[in-house]
Image 1 (spheres, rainbow, N blue to C red):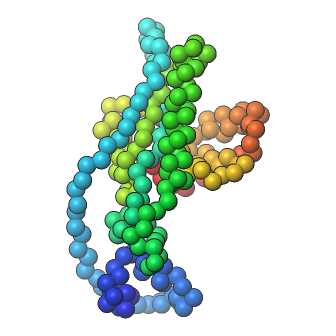
Image 2: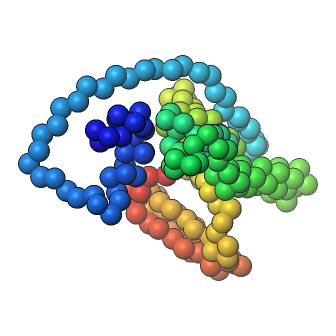
Image 3: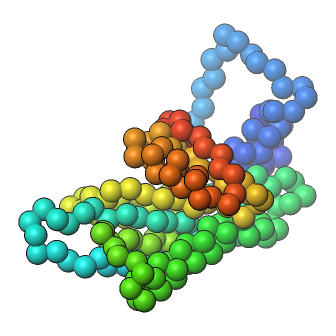
Length: 212
């Protein structure tokens, strides 16, 4: 740690990478004291939101809560200490490939929106609820965009959320995370499996975090 600080390499990720090397070891019964200075840098980001409206019913209590489908569209760029970049020394300042994280999720979001809106237009899709399509900003620096959306929507409630992140390298498999967050997901996925052309890999643990 002392050597890294002396070299000016104060990135937490760099320190973690160095500590996880072959010579890393656990030091027990040692107390450390540190002083941390936090510099707040304000900037502006923009979520992009679209809504596919369901027909409004005149029956009391007939309205259903909307479904939200989202993907973050921000990118690590060239990295830096303010991001989650894992770039090594010789990779500092280079553009991080973003086709998978998360151009793949955004492409899928646009395709789903196009498909469902086209089906609604030609009358083959009867919507029972609104569908909100959300392209989030600021995910790579702490899920800022989606957090703002939820915080500014306290008067509204949502029935479910489907997140698409890093789905470009799955090959033949479709991977579904956090299926345990709702009892309804298991039934719906099992129904979908009957007609699925690709095998499904399901992770039901609701404690697993989903980046958005």
